[in-house]
Amino acid sequence: MSPRFREEEGFVFKIYSNEEERKHIHVVKAGNEAKFWLEPEISMAYNHGFKEKEVKKIIQLVEKYGNEFKQQFAAHIGKRLDD
Image (tube, rainbow, N blue to C red):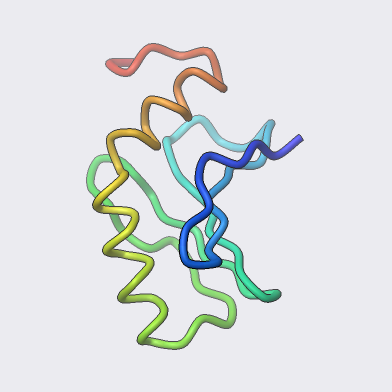
């Protein structure tokens, strides 16, 4: 199961269940995928196929919704935010 947390400008933000506990978000669009760590700060773990302009837009969106994604991740995984 991979819950969708948000869809904006064609980008789908989700996680894959049973992955590592460190808070992160996957972004997919048109067969491309990137993964961003949400802690200790927002940073890109990997990028498969997105162009630089798209990555910049994704970073803006991840920064905009980062706290929301952390809360959604914690709720889905069943952890407290301060773990």
